[in-house]
Length: 108
Image (cartoon, rainbow, N blue to C red; front, top):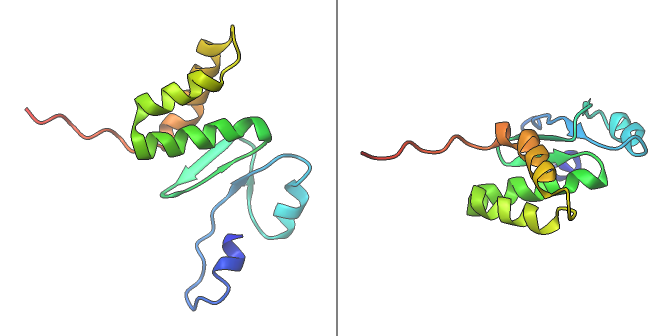
């Protein structure tokens, strides 16, 4: 989609890798996009999640960027399976935390 959206631009499009499932991977590769073997990746304001179960990573990343980590944690807790909430939330943060901006230092 990014390639099509930038088709009319005069400057070269910046390449972003993608995360995808094994079914759609051949089409993504055929479009000239590098496919990463990981569930989530983000750079700047563009993120990609591979596989339908990775969509929660994408949602949590967006919520964390817009509303903060507490809001993202609440959303993850709401959708996590009963009996697996802690494990599910920890896994999500392991996958998205490194792609979130560092918190601003507190003013003293």
